[in-house]
Amino acid sequence: MFYEVAMIVGVCTVYLSIEQANTLKEKRMVLKSLIARLKNKFNISVAEVDNQDIIKNAAIGFACVTNDTGHANSIIQHVLNYIETFSEAVIIDISIEIL
Image (cartoon, rainbow, N blue to C red; front, side, top):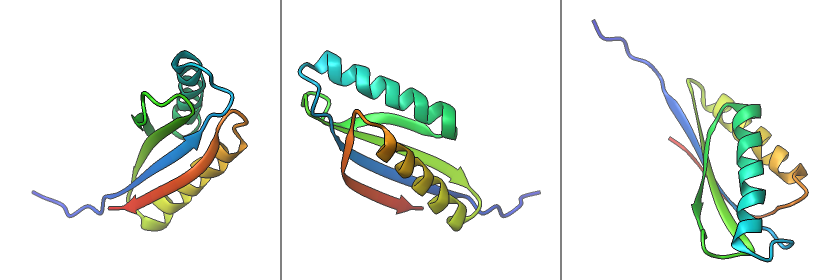
């Protein structure tokens, strides 16, 4: 027997500036810290998705799965608010999709 289930996926790409990074190693240390915090605090899937070889810029993507569009938007907004408080990186652009 099959049940119709509403599955909403919220996807967000966040472009960051990491001005204090002078090497790729320093950049990756900042991103590793941010990614670990986001995974632990929000139980989302998150990874570096672009600009891997650019020292001062980064792009991370994260996704959440829920059964309500409003809840997906709420999770994304909470994650973005948290990233804004992260002192080592500044948000320069955001792309959000609700699927």
